[in-house]
Structure formats: structure tokens, C-alpha cells
Amino acid sequence: MDSNRTLAIRIALPLLLLGSLFFCLATGSVSLGAKDIASCLVLQCPDSLTETILWDIRLPRVLMAVLVGAGLALSGAMLQTCTRNPLADPYLFGIVSGAGLGATIVTTVLPADWQPLLPLFAFMGAMIAVVIVIALSQYLQRFEMILLCGVAIGFMFSAITQFLLYLGEPFAANRIIFWLMGSLANVAMSNVFWLAGALLITCIVSLRFARHLDALMLDDDSAEALGVDTKKLRLMLLLLCALLTSVIVAWCGGIGFVGLMIPHIVRAIWGSSGIKLVVGSMLVGGVFLLWVDFIARQALPNQEIPLGVITAALGSVFFVGIMIQRQIKSS
Image 1 (tube, rainbow, N blue to C red):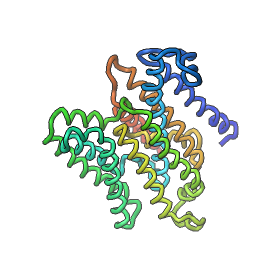
Image 2 (cartoon, one colour; image 1 turned 60 degrees about the vertical axis):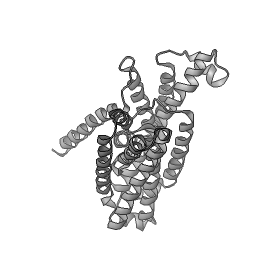
Image 3 (tube, rainbow, N blue to C red; image 1 turned 120 degrees about the horizontal axis):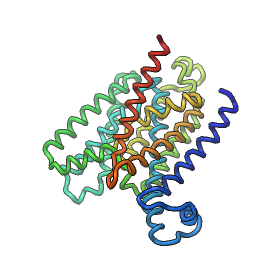
Image 4 (tube, rainbow, N blue to C red; image 1 turned 180 degrees about the vertical axis):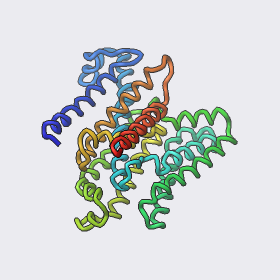
């Protein structure tokens, strides 16, 4: 790639992220001025209302949007590289179905005073699904089967969830369905810190093994000839991505297609080498989900659209576009 274009992308992506962050902080039912935001972030807020809006409502939400978008995009990039499957997505490993089952159990089966533990049960459900998928793929001794195992486990967990919802109260079913469609409405700053920690660890490991990922894109024999332990590398990255995605789902519900779309966009604009893919996916993913959340908050008056609805609509169009583009190239 042309060095001038690479430099332009390196400068443009962080600026785009910062500009989007600032715009989303300023815009809402109550508009905040640039001077007020800068004053709140650096010194002291001009009044208590501005302080509450910025620190308690908007800042946790926009930071969470950036982290969720970056985390899902990074997980998708790693999984597509590990499996050499361009359709791999973090949610194909049964994570959403497992989290949904955990959330359904705590909502419909356990007493009402267990409700605050919903994120914990959702996380446990997601991790149980991942452990079963990995164990199955290890038993079959074929890593490429992991996606099929994930789909099968996902269907099984979804079936149990639907059965529990069928037996439960209609109000509980509506609440779980809305939660599964994804939202950032109830996030707090403590959630941001937890997710930031998980994303930082995944990012550091991904950058540390960026060259190994480049080798993995060739084939297993070539990668092992270059000194890469392909089985250990895949297992480690899969566990990290599953952990990161489980944390995201536990607090924000299911927000699909981000991990599928963003790595394709980054490869198209910046290339597919390891470091560019890792950094580019995180930046573009963060910007993307910031604007999705902005649309979700602003599109309809006095109500919020679930994030998963918007990402699924965009993702389906994107997916069809890729297929048409490939058909045109092959013909």
C-alpha cells in the first residue's frame, strides 16, 4: 500500500474517533457546549445538571460504545484469521445463546432478588457455551469444525431458552428479548473499567502475536515451519476472544454483525497484515458503534431502538453487497 495513504489512515482514524466521541457527548435531549464539556473533563462542571448528564449518563455510555465496538471488531478479526474463514463472527460460538440462557434462568426461574445478578449469570452462560464448543472441537480434533459446533450449541441453548420463556411470565419474556437485542442504556462507569481491562489484555496479546497471525494466514504447514505452534495459538486467541465477547454480552446483550463487518472494511481500506488489522479494527469498530448508538438514541422521539436491530439491518445489506461484489469479480 502507498505510504502516503497509510500515513493518512493512521492520522484520520484516531481523529475520526475523537471527533465522534466529542459529538456524541455534546448531542442528546440536552445539548452541551464545547466549553462546558472541556470544563467538566479538565476542571469543574459549570453546574450540577451538566455534571450529572456528562459524568453519570453520557460519558459511560459513549466510552462503552467505543469499547464494545472495538472489542467485537477485534474478536471478529482474530477469529477470521484463526479459522481462515471470512464469515467467522464472535457470536457464532454460541456466546449469545449461552448468555441468553443464563439471563433467562435468573429472570424466570430464580427469585426476584437475584435480578441484579443478571450480568453474572449471562457471563457464566456464555462461558459454559464456549467451553462446550472448545471441548467438542478438541474431541473431534478438527479446529475447522469449531464454527459448526458453535452453531449447534447455539441452537441447543436457544431451544432451552425459548422453552423457559414459554413457561415464564410474558413480562419476563419481553424483558429478556429486549435485552438480547442489545442496548447501552444501563451501563455504568464500573462496567467500562471491567471491559477496558479485558480489551486491553486481548489487544496486547493480539499485537504480541501479530506476526504469528500473518503466518497463520498462509497454511498450517507453512506457519509451523516458521516456528508457530498453530494449535496453542488458536486456542489461546479463541479463549481470549470468547472471554472478551462474553463480558460484552453480559452487560450489553447481543450486538451482532460488528465482528463480521468491520474486519472486512479494515482489510479493504488498510490491508490485512496483523498490526494494521488489530489496530484498524479497534478504531473503526469504536467509531462504528458510537454512531450506531447515536442513531439508536436519536432516530425515534422518546424511545430507543435496540442496537442489535440496527447492526443486523446494516450487516445484512453489507453481507449481500460482499456476495454481489465477489460475483462481479468472478464473472
